[in-house]
Length: 423
Image 1: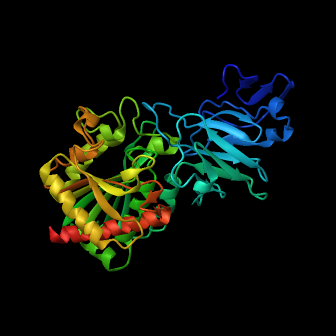
Image 2: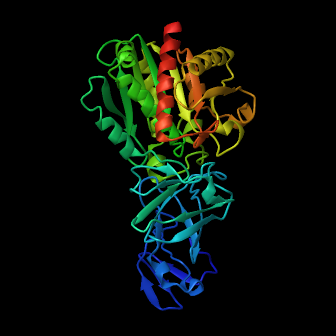
Image 3: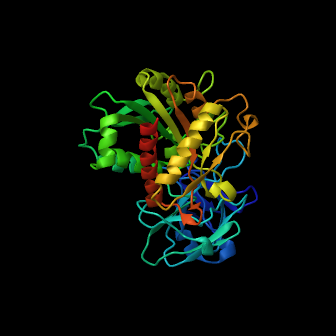
């Protein structure tokens, strides 16, 4: 987005350089839906090659506002759209910068995570952490390889509809998987409900796993994927689930936010995870509240809502459960936590809980609104209701990656089996 005092005059479809008198068709999009275009300040940089650099967020999950480019320095910030206050998700791509070294400077608060940005050089198919050595305060530096035409940068590793589709395609012939439509979103996207496990017979237990109540919290999706892999596996653990438990998974509660690249957290007038009290406003939440009690048939024993916390520091770099105010629920959360700690085999260690009334987990934070777990705790027959926070990048010194998050999901599946057998 170009400031009022800029010498650049923006037009949809092109950018007019008054001092030079030419129109260059580039796509350095600041606000992806507005179609604004901008490029580096040629007059100040004195380098006409800057016109070849294109920066945009015009793809699923993209999010950025580019304020200006001066030479090899880009000034930018997260697009907060309908977010109340500040949040930190961003995801953009750079094209035409092969062989250059550029600095990306965030102009507001620092939205760079503890392992630097996530980077992809294959169109978002695979990602790696750039590392803290590339970061200076609220900026990072990247040397673009000579042979790479496009590089994507993001606050964390994205997980989108295409990733879910790729995962489900691996199991399309499995008799233990059924994919149905929960509802259509406000923007008419299909919101999935996925059934795995004991779906061809009457199960002993039913459990619900939800993710992406907050659109930006993508590491939770990799953990959910690891859990579903365990249930669908042709091994002893998978067979136990297939004989005993029907799992209902809602992978994208905020489907529009995921695909549009929204923050999702603190969305106005309230986000999806504050929509469970009274008359809900989001189609997916309305559908969950209608479908789950009818589907349960008195066999719903567990509800787990997967999230990611704040950027960095303290418990934000630990896996933890968010305690409920109900003392019976809290007791079950603690019991499950001990099991999860005992069965863990992956690199990401669970070792903490956040009791209700501590830190941000207070009634004042929720006000008169109701979260998904508060609502689920009232369902007939439910035993364990919990929110699990999985950090975006770091757990006790171990990197959070798609692979390690999936391993945590498998540990979660093992722990739930032991919990259900013990209860």
